[in-house]
Length: 245
Image (cartoon, rainbow, N blue to C red; front, side, top):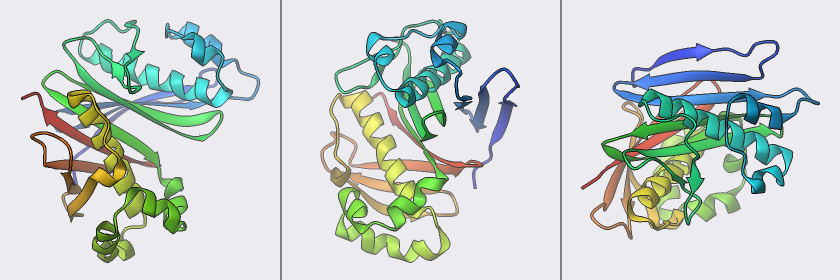
């Protein structure tokens, strides 16, 4: 298991947002959560935290406004951690990926349990490309109970290989799904193209070190990639780093 330190700011009566800094060795992850009371205007929070609100988000549904807010808020904390301008307007690229300041490589992920409650996480790195994903543990049953969904992101080889881990890990399929999301983000950040789930295949898993190795079928100079995973209180976090070379 990996060593992890947390620096938390809890919800307050009048503030529906919380923040945690998660540090694993020299890596920092910035997690934000929202629990918005019914009747509270999410648009007010954009103003309060000085977060740019694009027109398409103004016109989107309430849930999308919330998840976009906590994602950008997590990015704001990540930017501050590297002494970057925290009011930097984080735009999206061709594939929906965030476009960071030139000196940084970063990644954002969010997961909502309902329209007004969810979590987001962001990480920045100046030396490597990064891909991260966060998933609510409560979502594990969706994958465990539906073979049709499994077949959308796992090959027959993977399903057979992972079978030996199932009894000891209730969240196994959710971890693999999250890991592939992290890889897709990191590869897109570095190479500017998007892999499909079936182009990423797990070939090794170590539940002691909480690491997995995946084979990538179409990524130049990255035939194999290592993904780490950690268990938070209510979520699973996966992350991968790729060299700039």
